[in-house]
Image 1 (cartoon, one colour):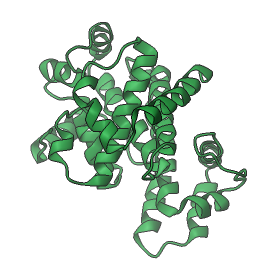
Image 2 (cartoon, rainbow, N blue to C red; image 1 turned 30 degrees about the vertical axis):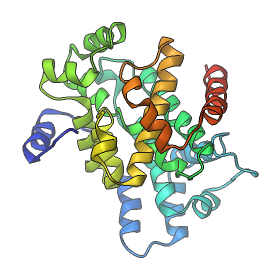
Image 3 (spheres, one colour; image 1 turned 120 degrees about the horizontal axis):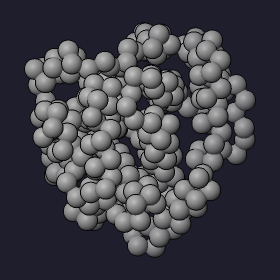
Length: 282
């Protein structure tokens, strides 16, 4: 497990250009901190045309499997609930937060990969015996590597490290980052998530998403299930892109399948659905 303290967080705060929390997200969090009213939350989102359109697009995507189309933000808030709609908005805002002109890697490519992991996480959720909120999984999928663009903005040669990692990923990326830059994208992503006031459980998953001892160290069933879902989604996408499992997958595979309660038949059924999505979306 990654250990973190105030000195590490202060170093990130002083050394990195972390996107400020958007005004619309602050307004939503302010509303949720008191006695929130559904229509006030809907009005905050609807006031931003691009955000409301993006939220409706996500909700009406096949990953939610709705029987009918959600046509306005009030319906969306009623369907998802206040916290879940805020999570969807947060994920959309994150994708708009980084400036490509300041970043040494392709943000389009980065967000395409993050979006695939987020969507595959939602597909996995549909196959589980114990439901997990797809909004939370979608947010984790988008945010788990959100420290990478900040690293690429801070360090001019970060893109070359990423390319080296794509060519040889037997050593985890965060180890290479620590060796070269004395920090890693999980810590930076955690700082971003906490500065945006994401739920504490989600922040912890972002911080620990490369920790192979997470299952033995964490006793929270929700965190364990979300972590397992993320790692499975990451591996599905990695196999689709690299034609082989993630190097660390073998060490956690059985724990992931046990926690998600997927037997061999259910896993194969899930695998077919994921492969169909990944083929059709590219």
